[in-house]
Length: 255
Ligand code: PGA
Image (cartoon, rainbow, N blue to C red; front, side, top):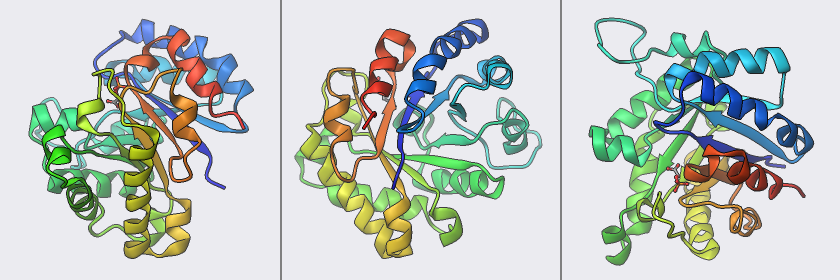
């Protein structure tokens, strides 16, 4: 009952033109797999318009996401992007609290919460990222650490919004490193996240919330993650930058 989401996070890669070509080249596979996979792409801000234009013209079954957003309506916030700037471009999902934002730009759990609330307030859906460092994992603190991140990120969010929520579990030590969590390790954390969502919002919500795995997802391992009962898709970085990498991951979601 939860549709698998295959989301490509293009990070700081691709010009507007390159992103438009890539999304065009993904149209066929997204169309063929549309019954089983919701395909999402998150280009950099500067490519949102060109990708939106392709989507508006060709109507592929691909949904537009942004990689970040500021929570204020507008104002003197040099370099930031407001919610309305994204809704205006047809953005449906916003990645919030990616570990690279936390690590390089100092985003705290409180900032992640402000952003998540603002995304919902503007009728979009956050893809809230969480994940532990290798140090935290080795100290046996992963469950508490992830629970802390999620509890804080979801503070003040209404049940009616939470039901649409997407959470991405991305162990930091697996991002861009070629190391993946085993499907069993990832499933364990995703199962714990679902139990926490149930504690916070009840069973109906927890049964509908989609939980993605991210961290070196590749054509060779995607199906193993998708087969786990509490993993509802993937947030893909490096492998989502080419059709050769991304298309087989989308196909792996086919039932
Ligand atoms: P990766 O990135 O697939 O390159 O490890 C995942 C992510 O950061 O979302």
